[in-house]
Length: 266
Image 1 (cartoon, rainbow, N blue to C red):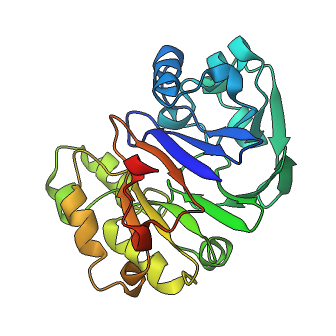
Image 2: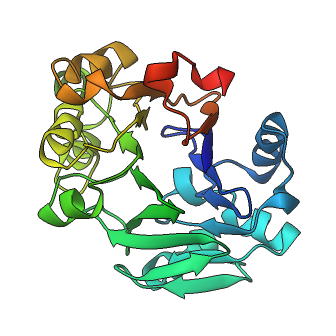
């Protein structure tokens, strides 16, 4: 299994997961043309994709989904609540899934896990290929016992480090937006991401992708500071996903920490 990001942040999110037999796109918050261009930078075309998985209906996750699906006949797996959003009008190949449901696309086994977020019926995904487990966990406002249990035992994890509470408080957002982002159904602060890592079983975790970093209310330096002292750093490589370029392909069967390889080298 390998993973790449086409972009991560409030302007658009899209993650590729490739098992070698099955290619999945998790969310497409980029306009169709931009998504196609970024796919090309990863050596792919949209026609190579087997299915799109959608976490929720916010524009930075679904902006290009319907157009990409229509253009290439791609099935889209999403909850009924997400499918009911006007932002997904025109979707022709929707496959409704339930929060908590497990299903297969090709040789990839997938679990749609419910999360606390201010959307109609949001989920995040765990994916298995062979013995490897990948978790993709962004866009949630609090760490619940279910989230800790569901996303434990991952070999690789995409985890939201959205904001620094001080920067959010002092930043330019209106008061109502600050309350939403920092609330229980908003986005994870750096300290909450660290709290998840402290409570989840991360014994198998070899690669941590720091994702969905706010460009207004956070910085990579502050996200890294939240990881200081975390015991997992001894065995886990940390890779940042950026808004502009995401991150290049990473082979999850390779132990980056012990080989000294960077994400770009895999």
